[in-house]
Length: 577
Image 1 (cartoon, helix red, strand yellow):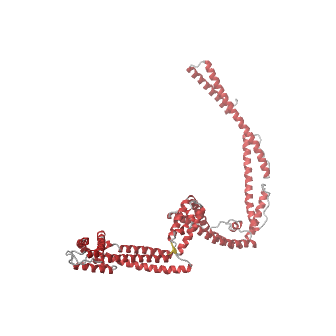
Image 2 (cartoon, one colour):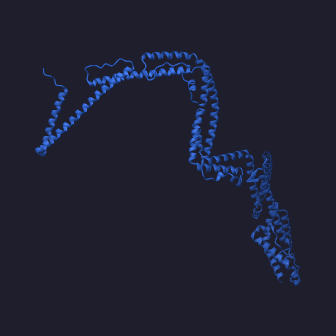
Image 3 (cartoon, rainbow, N blue to C red):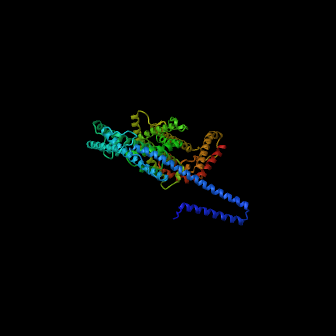
């Protein structure tokens, strides 16, 4: 019976047939193209060389694969032998009569199984040792000894397990004594958000409720820990409040929007310690922003300082005494100096806020009073009717009373302050009580000066001109005698005319000079009424009802100005002769 060819032989035969078929096709193509035989041989040789190179390359790669497999077999044999010796296992026996590929696979699987056994033992040893070390640390006992770096045998692992069970039973007997102190520690830790950072705390707060050895010294240590946590809670609360104040100050310095401030406060939640951490992070972030904008921050601090200086009524000399204000070298130290000055001014203002508010109110009222006083001297207001003058007078009287009341209250408060402090209360570098008295004194002097000036002007304008009745000529002697009077009369009349032309309302208060002998166009009774009315005005200038009568007189007097001018011209001509 003939031998059945193997698949590889069939495939090789098929490969040869494919090559022959391909070469035949190439020859047909070359004939069709018209390639000469010499050229066909060259091309055939190139095809042959290409096929040989490809096969040789494949042979080389397969040989290299074989070598790698054989090398891997040797390496894995050595590793497996060494590892099984460490684990106290019998040597590995490979199966005979197998291919090198199958041998490599068997060795790889055996090595993986041995490594797994090693890792399991090491992991179990690690867990048992951790338990043993923890228990022995709590109970001050000696741990089970296994040489470092060695792989324990199964019997050693069983002995270690038994050792751990014994320590666990011993530990349970002391657990009840520990629970009370541990609960107290937990309570404090929850309140301040404290994470255990020492062995003592970690053991006391173990989730397994497994405390360390409860010897007397350990109980004392736990009690000290409770006291320490209580003090820490108080300290953390104080730190949190200080951080919040610093952040709030930087928010104000950086003009942080209120919406962002509220959002930040809402996000900071948790235990006290967690809040402290969050506030610290916010403070650091703001500090970085402050450093980046140091010039702007100092500028804003200076604006805040200017505000407090203004509130505290500091003079230019007092402000100039703070030299860092004028320093343009923007540094952290400069900012700190400004912060200290702001804090000093803030304390000063808050301490004396009532006084400063009272002074501000008094000054505002004084300004309003001065405006009303100035308005009362404006002659144009006499043109207005309808009770305006009466309303102004009532308002002025009301403001005057309020100003007097405020001044008396301030005087009492400031005198009390000066007595307590032992120094003068200054504004703009001047004692405020002196300043207030000077304001009233200056106002009084101004009013007195205005009264004297008005009285003097009225007396000059009221002096009558002397003239002989019914006489049109004078002797030279009488002319010389009256010459001085006539000149004076001219000056007075000129003043009257000037006043009349520049301020119509002044005519109502200032009479026009006339001669004793009236002209035909000016009746004596009318002139007499003018003088009587003017005398009443000088005596009752503070009464508004009389001022209304002046307006009526103004109309009547304006009609008679031309007649008075005629008298003045007649007097001048008479003196010329």
